[in-house]
Amino acid sequence: MRLLIASFCLIFLFFSTGVSAKIVFESELDGVRGIYVMDDDGSNLTLLTDVLNPSSPRWSPDGRQIVFYRQVNPNDLLINHIFIMNADGSNIRQLTPPDNLDDWDPSFSPDGTSIVFNQDVRRNNKSTSFICVMDLATGAIEHIAELGANWPVWSPDGKKIVFTPFSILGRTGSNLWMMDADGHKPHELLPPLPKQPLIDRVYPRWASAPNGDQQILYLQSEKTFEVIDGVGRFIPQAYKYFIYDINRGTSRRLAFIPKNYRCAGLAWMDNGNSVLLSTYKVQLKEPVKGLLHPYNLYKYHIATGKFTRLTEHPGSDSFPDWIDDKALSVSPEGKLPTPWGQLKSLLPAYRNAFKAVWRNVTASLRVPVTALYRSRGFRPSFLYHFY
Image (tube, rainbow, N blue to C red):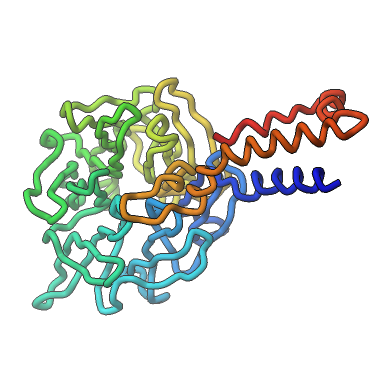
């Protein structure tokens, strides 16, 4: 009996401490915008917060926290600040000062000690935009570049920041730019844009490829701008998805993604082997109607071009971010290992101990447990999936 109890305790340990890959994203369900998390197969959907239109969540490198921005005044959609919360939605707290005009698009540094984001401040009775870095330990904010920009994100080594400057509505597009992490040497990363069609290169996500190359995932949105019945309208021409290789200075298009898949956020997935995207199908060369569209999340496998739909509902999912248990298991230099990392380092010992207990249990029973499982169509293969 003691051996049986010990074996079940070990089984419980394996299942209760396992951490699966997770997706955090913004979703609008039943007219209420919230931040949700789910397993990366679309299961176990959980609402974390839906207070005052939270948006653009990003995982911390260790998976313990999520940074995002949201309104602070229910009567003013244009004033947003940066917030942070635990991965389970608890301990929500505001990071940026309440006297700022607007803060948005936060993203963690690779070591998790800082965030980069955009900020509007009022100077000399006018609004000025900056790319900012906040030290999370002290709360100190540094304005590293006087630029109006979206989606700033660090390189994996923390030495560079890539971003997309503001475009001028109906007149200019927006290219990908890069600068040093201290804000110096801002320059266009990709070739200059043509005048027509209007091109926006957006949603940059920088990561290391499986072979070690530095790559930036981005969307190239191509459109024209026309005034129809006195109202300016964008006419979509194509949506193209690219991976830019930093070392080679070349872009390759993900050709299996159709040109009519409009996007509301990109992320790497499966450690650089897949792309996570928020998308829905549009009619090209026709005016875009309305403001709300039924975006859902899809996984796109780069090598095969296979699509897997992860969400399906009449609402809208956008700005996803992905993290897996390998990220949790790696301890950044100078940091303590995460509990999951400690557990995985002990798994070989747990497996060996479990096998010994299992052999003793089956030997002590008149009917071997493994034979009983097989007679009923079960196979204890789950014992060998924790590497």
